[in-house]
Image (tube, rainbow, N blue to C red; front, side):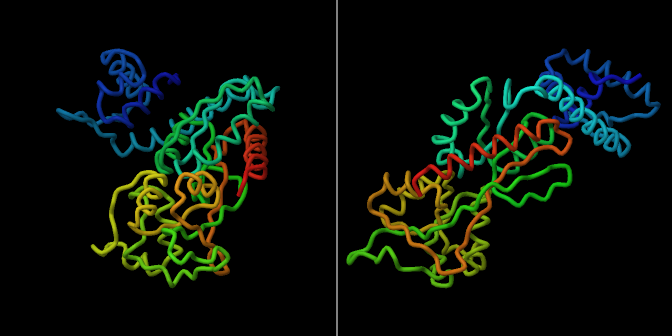
Length: 305
């Protein structure tokens, strides 16, 4: 009978493409991992791995076995979660992933509230881009992720929490701009629009809302500064290097830190992003995630914006 250990080793091998790196990932020796893979192939009666000099590849059948193994491993992890946490709400360890354009603005208010309501929770945070978070969620390395929706993954369930409007932020002008004035999307000059580097969903959302900027996104005239944080972009704007679209949740912190900028609302319909949670459909902790979402919604409602 095949074992979960063998399936974990196959998963590590598929993810790394190398016996040595796979062995290090699961904390065993390379010969031990290789022996378990050979035993798995013998039990299934078919080769799963194409062994090459410097790398390995899964055979076509091996890829399908790995896909099914991935589902079995996720279900096994969720079974353990159910047994450990089924009787208590948000107690014990929980791994939360969060994107960089949310973490520094929502967590300062949410974490104290989370600790107050659920003191037995042991939270582990992972902040990185959406693509990596989704991969780690699917692999079982994360329990739940907080990100911008929608997310089109058949094996992942999502929960909408709240909408986050976008504001147009530019350097304060002399004479001062009327803070109650509205900006039309068509009026944005794409050559002055500063965006986060590739891979950030906030960049894609900004381009989606500003069609002129989207059409010019590959134009050399559009600044390409490789910024990985909104704080860096705000420093550039304060020094007259351009403008950007800033999420509403970021306004209090970023405007307070950069007095030489002004934030203006857009004309209706105002652009916005959806903020929500996502988890594996097989997870037994859906009730935990719903309670976690309520903490984020309540902290958002109590924050200045």
